[in-house]
Image (cartoon, rainbow, N blue to C red; front, side, top):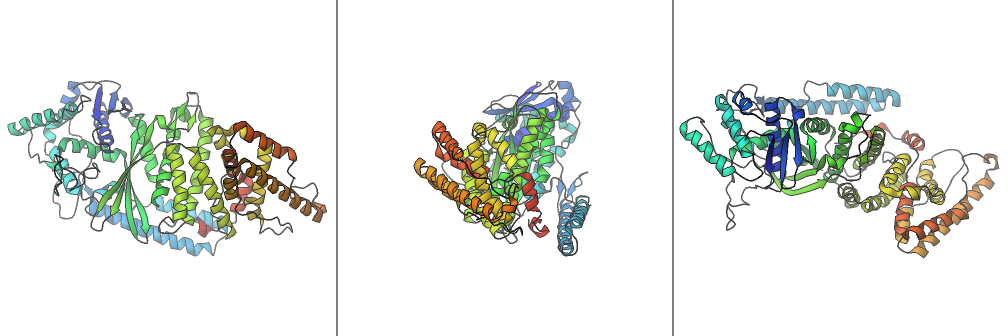
Length: 608
């Protein structure tokens, strides 16, 4: 048991074992008194906790009681345990904080009509800082405390029992530690042996007041009451028994790796979702920093958007904490998924009196985010920020309660792309989003954002489409599509006497024609002819603008020939069509910033 490697067998198929690994890593780091000395590595059938130096008998012999997690005191609880968390106090504090938020929201609405844009921004920032510094700001682990309480997972009683099993034996805590080390000393299951050893200590009086417990659903999402049996010959409505020492380690891990977010399903109606980072190979100190930085920046929203945002923010946070980003001298290629394989997720349905797990799933970390140095890492951060900006504003533009079918399908395509690392789903998303964007801007709902052209260009190059983007004909035709759609839509309100036709439905037309080479080329030919004719008419009508950027350049025959050459080279009209859509419906940053000045501050307010 005194060694430099410990093991957590993956015997649940859920995040339960990952929490176990977190809890064990926490205990070992406390024994070593250094988080940097602990690595968590996924070895396939088990997690390995690898130490820079071994745990020794002397360390354990000198070990004093460690609070791996704190006791939670509820109303009517007279337990005299120092440093307990007062649940009622924390709940009241969270309630007051929400009232402060509502009050600030009202102040912002009042200020909107009285202040200019610059003054409003400053006032908004001031109120935000006040809220961030509020004495009523909830604890960092408030989401987990809520998940444990009786109105959600009804886990608090078992939580307290597990805590007291250990706390009541704090004078002999070293025996608890020894048995934890025994439990995880081998990659093979030896729970029976450890349980027998503990029972001997209980009979001899060396350990006292040990109470057997049922599985805590918060850390065992597969152990739903009434849906399991020791033998596969019946379904018992009763609770499922669990080994209290393993529950102790899992509960400790819960505060080191779980994120719980509310899901808005209607006005004042909420479900919840649990996320747990599934580490592939990461130092425990780095994990702690990633977890603490990631958790507060993920805000509440609807289910699919939350999945997307979690993955994007996870990737961004991993980049910002990677060695290549921190140390500019390093130049070793890193992938985001080399640190974290993905996210375990559990959807909790509000059943009225409590929440129940209804879906256990897994989101993979994208495998295409790779960088050699800080400069390349910075490019990915810009891309992620751009995508987050787009996703965020789809959220605001959608139903206030839940995702409508069309928006849901569009977002599911993006989630499939980011979690499955399949660019085809991104292209499907971009076609639908382009039409969605045009529709919203036509209604002057300018808060919906196009992708940044520069970020889209870097992104598509990273996805191995750089050769196509270098093609001059492709770029010129994509620009013509941009001029005829998104740019024309934004320019319709300009009072400069120049009005170009706004073409709706081009993204869908490109997608529909793409499977048929002849039809696709004919569609592009017709578009170019119409585009050039319109450019000529406007130039003739406004001779005074000759030589200025306000007039459009015509598309050359060579541009179409370049596109045809690309189609022949790659033997793939569909990819060319989708790339034209992705590139053509993105805007230059300067033009995008100019258009965003139209956005009212009311549009920027997050309703959740």
